[in-house]
Picture 1 (tube, rainbow, N blue to C red):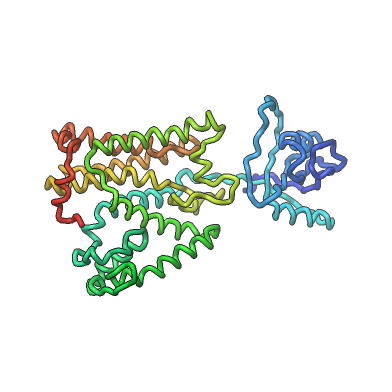
Picture 2: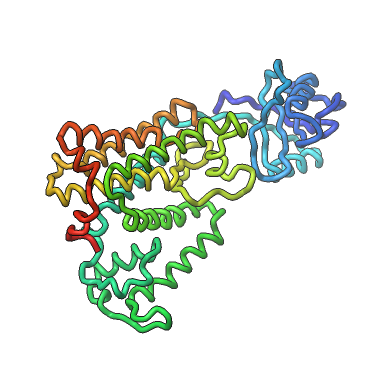
Length: 396
């Protein structure tokens, strides 16, 4: 920090910094507004006027990458150029307009090699799959009659009802008659207002700094529900599904920029230039990164491999396999390793978005195929019949 560049700020004149300057900028940092000409033109003009840096005031609170046009083959700009939000620029301009002396220090903090937020996200993703796979055995109350579960089929609601019914077993027996719905669990009805209020509050405060907490809770509950309702019959179906998702993910991250000049998947996930981001992902702020931002993982990167992991658990139960000679434990390890490789690639590629399924599919589908072939179970895994699953004691 003590080595950071520090200079006095001076308003560019003209303020757009697009033509020859009349203000003295020698050894100063120019303050200019966005617009009227390219960023490179502003930088060249300020540098020609003797400035040692340029602050570009954006026309809103968002910050964008300042890029060069296709014709700028040789820019020859040696000074730093920084974009600042409209509110910050307005304050600086106000001080300078009133004759105040404003000293600006340009500082580029170093990012940590490993941010703990990525570790938390890794734990959340792996934990969601483990929890969804073991949900019926660990949480669901066997005494809850399915006839009274009409309101317990969606996200947070189904998770809360089954969890509370497990803890307070008497609550799982009381019912109430409702128009159009018939006999419904009292617990199920009582949970509905809480879930509605929770979802509405998240929607209202979705832009707040703490909104990620609500989004992650809703997302995890939704994924647990999906992994309970959608079940793969065998790895033949899993191979078709995960292979298609594998190609799909790679196309939209790596190949789509060649067609649309940007990665559509990354742009949609981040909500570039819209102020809104798609809520179909888990995200955690980079608490220890001075640059801020979020670490994210899409629901598909959890659900698609999670379907296979959940199947492996049911197969182990039906085949009476142990932890070591089964497949569930090894697929959990494979998913965890695949997700680790995703973050490693993200680090090595300097933050460029990665198709997580590029690493997760080989580490899960590839692993179960290889293990099944080595153990002689590949035929059973490939042709596993639905009828066998219906005999499992944990099936609803």
